[in-house]
Length: 80
View: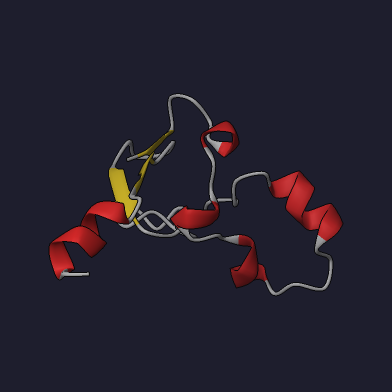
């Protein structure tokens, strides 16, 4: 598989910061806004915190291949 095919299969998570309205893009859920450094909670926070009590905080932020459309908050997130 060449580099172009590999890039086209990767999902991109686009998130708007609810504080400064900056648009953030990454291949993993972000812990902080890249512009104002406002902390973010992971998607499905309450599900994760109750089921994965022993996990480190960084492990609650999933890569995009584990995120489904149903996990997203409409208006703040886009999975591209």
